[in-house]
Image (tube, rainbow, N blue to C red; front, side):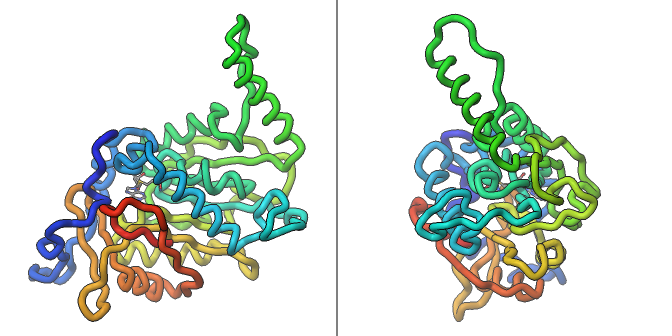
Length: 323
Ligand code: SAH
């Protein structure tokens, strides 16, 4: 996949020919085929460039990840680990370990760059074997800044290697002053998922990192989340499965406290008159929904939209991305 931007994220030239349902005399419009979706991703590189359809090496991931962190901090300023204009004097962390869920997580790009810097624990779910194993490999090997590990001290006089080793050592020492961070990696798709029991119907790959302080978190019998993050994967769900997932997601949020579901996805235009519409992309068997269609999904799941943001700085040829 690297190099060539993925058609999936491009605006369709002849959108009207792929409108779902209108000309078909079936009771149900064809929805995404889950096996076909997995097969598509199975043939994509297990890299940031792969999961971002060829947009992984330019500014897109940086801009996109920064916006996500800022949005999280604007809704949950107490997540900030250090003083900043939004929270000049951060309050001490709550007794529970603040926990996030990342679904359809690919190789863990969002967990690594958006969630782990702010949360104590992350549960990472991804159905494609090579993606989920790559996520775990990176997380467990010390490649992620927030899960540092010290390797063997280099011998010889390679200054770069020595500097990298010293930096790892510094990060490990620094992290010992804190509560410790973890990521629990599970191979699982979204269909039928109850986030409270993330490994039911899935395969545990492992937990990377270490817990030193704080209660509960990612490895308890019933996981409760402060944030559930869904990015560029809900198109793989048909309407009933998506609504069922969102309802269960809401029930898995920490009650009575600031807790949110974030949905960051491509949006096509609404049909004339602001009517909801969706397109089935035959290549990866995913639906691109319009804004009104997303609102319909959220309404059907009994969710209230409290913030809507357009991702700025995305290339012109891509669909609008909204959180
Ligand atoms: N959210 C990640 C990955 C996006 S790529 C990121 O932003 O970097 C789309 C992801 O959706 C892939 O990892 C793909 O394997 C996953 N996916 C495909 N079918 C799925 C399903 N049925 N359930 C959950 N995830 C699915």
